[in-house]
Image (cartoon, rainbow, N blue to C red):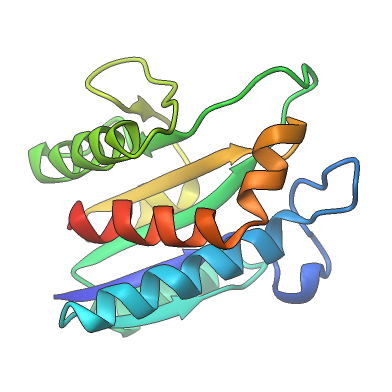
Length: 174
């Protein structure tokens, strides 16, 4: 299987670092670490993998298409005004087919089994018209791995434990 992993937000955080926690933890870096851990695990399972991190969403989609990816996943970390908000979220495009929806449900179920709280509208996932979900031609997910604005989740997302957990969750869901 050919897998494109999009580590959310601009490399080196310029011009857009994504969410930034009160302690300065930047989303782009958390996403990169989680994407790299997932890539290592997916390659070990025999998948061909590319990681794309770019401020241009059009460039991200073009890279996935040029790689001839069969699966696409964007990895992000969330933020909220309310610092008590927590949990992961798995998104599909509203027009996504059964294959994509099944994959989203597997990711949410694996995350729950691994001890992560998953915020969902139905079947473990949510729908959104995100550019990368709308414009890719292969099954595509966007996973918000937790909230950087929640102190406990931010500490977790910076940890090696988070990298291992998300690598496991995402690999077993393929």
